Length: 195
Image (cartoon, rainbow, N blue to C red; front, side, top):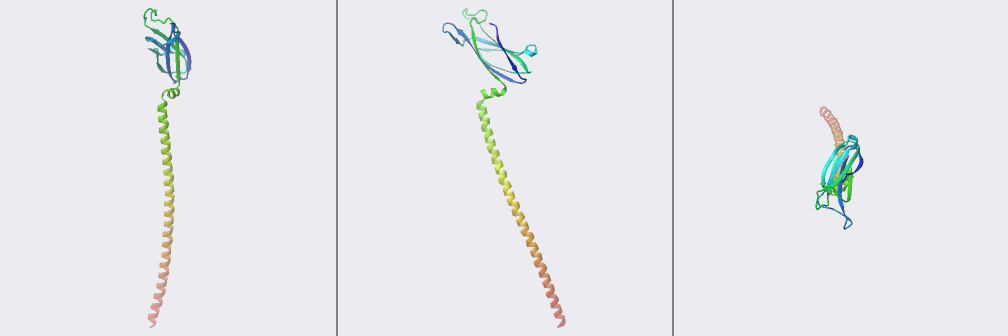
């Protein structure tokens, strides 16, 4: 059977994750069924780079492949089903009927994360929420500390101004007391000389 290929234009450094499933036509039941022993040859080539092969992997009839686009451009993605000869149904490992391919491509790292790691994302979202709550607590604590610091500064300034006023009052009282004592002593000494 000839490989079935399609082209995908990808930007540089893009992660591509593909999930595939191959089912073979079963005539008597008129349905597509998964057949044991079927293998899938997956190749990815960079068309723009002389068909440089990026992926060449052989897997089961259902699986996953991953690659990163090294450069921007068209990429040729091919699938070729085959299996070993069993009971005359196959000729040299080739499938004789039709094969139905189901392919799910996730292009870009974000789509892969969204599809496969929703649990991790919800954990990260929870942790971010916790960090936001802690940050809000820290901010509240900072505002509280600033308010306390402002109150303490105001109280210190008030106390300092009271100490300065009290000191000035004491100096005035001391000056008045000294002046009164000097006048009183002068009067006393004058009175003592006259008597």
